[in-house]
Image 1 (cartoon, one colour):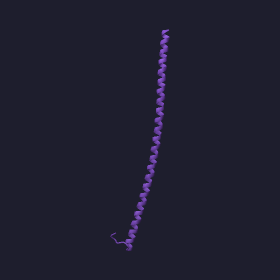
Image 2: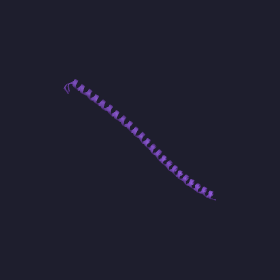
Image 3: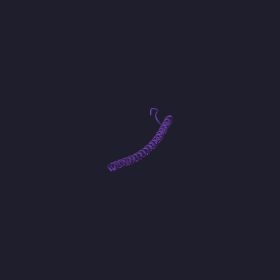
Image 4: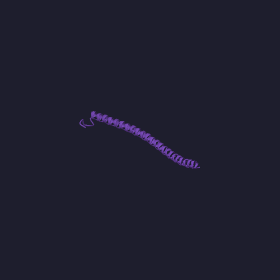
Length: 91
């Protein structure tokens, strides 16, 4: 009878231990899912920022080229006016 009682006590202890392990596994699974979701969110935001940077760089390059074209046009007008005598050669 004592042996059966000891086995039942051991079984109860093992069941408690098993339940604790299941609880820890469930918590770990939830933490993993939350971390995975956070990582996906960060990756998505990183891609979005990279696209925004590309767009800004393209815009900057376009504006820079437009400014270069304006300066070249102004230089050509200045040279033309100098040749026609409207501007002094020192200007």
